[in-house]
Amino acid sequence: MKRTLTVFFSFFLILSMAASAMAGGPPPKDLLKGYFTEINETDGSVQFRKDGTETMMTLHLNHDMTASDIRLNKKVLVTLDKHAAGENVIGHVSIMFMDLTLIKIGSLLLIGLIGGLLSGFIGSGGAFVMTPAMMSLGAPGAIAVASNMCHKFPKAMVGAFKRYKYGQVDVKLGLVMAVTAIIGVEIGIKIQMFIMNSWGNAGSNLYVSLVFVAVLVIVGLIVAIDAYKLAKGGGAEAKTPKLALALMKLNVPPMMEFKVAKVRISAWVTIPVGLFTGMLAATIAVGGFIGVPGMIYVIGASAMIASATELVIAFIMGCYGSIQWAISGLVDIRMTLLILAGSLFGVQLGALGTTYVKDHIIKIVMAAVMLIVAVSRGAKVPGYLADIGLMKALTPQSTALLNSISFWALITALGSAGAMITFYMIKGMMESRQQEKQAMLKTVQNEI
Image (cartoon, rainbow, N blue to C red; front, side, top):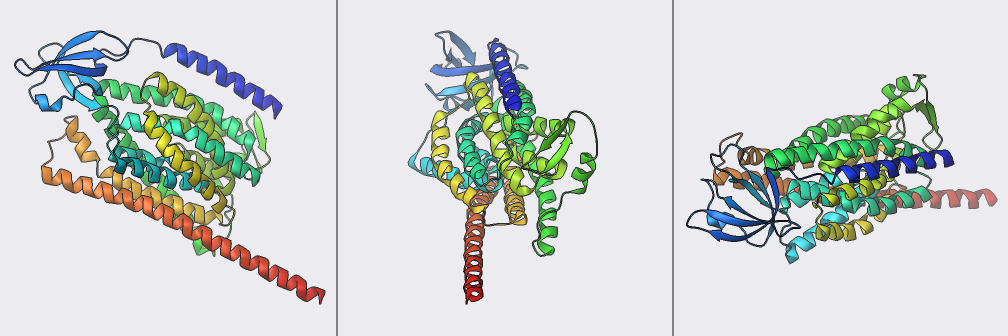
């Protein structure tokens, strides 16, 4: 274990230094970050000050824009139109950091609470609920991803420590997967930045939503089918999946033994699971619903151990990814602190709940919330396609309908997540107490 820790932290340090050095290159020419300071409605020009400098630029509104589309003295991302006839023509403008009202502050605290419950209960970090929720409140996709990842590592640390005390965390498995997950984080950040540089926040929002829908539907259905089979069998504990059993037979060095997970498997099997976990964590702030099913169905860990060990990976990835996103200037620290405040409380309740429920219950909650959130994000896709010109502009009625579907599906996901976890936790606690009373009664009867 000492050797594993030494190798891991050495790797983490070297990669962090290299990534920080690479991050210092010049920004893309077509993407500007800064503030509009003045607008001239006569000739349609605006004065723009680049973030972090006193450099001023003269930009021009495109033919679809008016002066009302420009917010002065608000930090914005500006994508220049590469196909416009003139120079420095604005293609798209997005406000980076949304205004916070009392309603939005309360909503972010509630989102953090529900996300924390999910994090402690299923080990996914809850980001597949929190990222869409922040986007629905008005945060750009990249800002929601970056801020979500930044809040994740202190929350994951609390959850991992809580479940470590319950004996559910395989520290060695978590560290081994974290090494490849960090590489995946680097790849994911590069993909996200490429999309933003090419299509701005509209492209980033579309990418985040499409990946969400695809992964949530696929993984959600797989987990739902598995949970149904387990529940139909009377709630028996999960058996090791056939795929995992087959992969355990591959004797390809180096072989690794994970005592808590009770698994001996080739390190080459863990590499792709960790890699995809990191890539998704960096691109959409979600890695748990790849990491957790990956550890269950590919590596062969139980749902209980996988969900707990994922918190270790989430802590390491979140810490590393936060540094990289902060370098890019895309972390909204206000949102980070608000969702963190709610989630630190929720994660402890969620972790407590896992001691009273069986594996198939965790899978039921995981699948149900995933599929509902997929509906919420899917309803947003047509609007994002219209924003980047891949389809005709939506009518106001269509936009309002899709936004309503997205909003209420998300509310349903948040409400059902909190209700299901609370219900199963209370039910499990009552059953546990009933079993304790019966055991005590038998003991007394035997003594008599």
